[in-house]
Amino acid sequence: MGTALAVTPGLPERRHQGREAERSLRAVTWSDKALASAAGMPQERHQMRRLARGRKTKPLARGRKTEPGPHPAVALISDRRKQQRALRSYRAWLAEPRGAEA
Image (cartoon, rainbow, N blue to C red):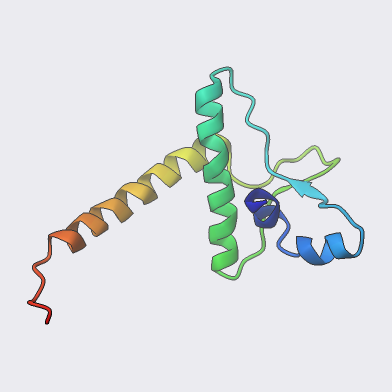
């Protein structure tokens, strides 16, 4: 469900009107299935970040030859770097001394 909402934010309204989603994410067709699976979620996160910044999503429109949006490898590497930064920040926050709470 998260993938569908990341690609088509107005999906609940569309479903209510009896229409399907017209877009999908770029297919990951790598021979290494574990790596291909790991690259799918960063594509979804990329679309969700676009929505959070107030921008439109850029998924693949069905029937079109062009494939907008990030390449799966780019999305995977970018997502890993963002997660590492977030984890570093979280570790620093955990290491901060806390005052005595009463």
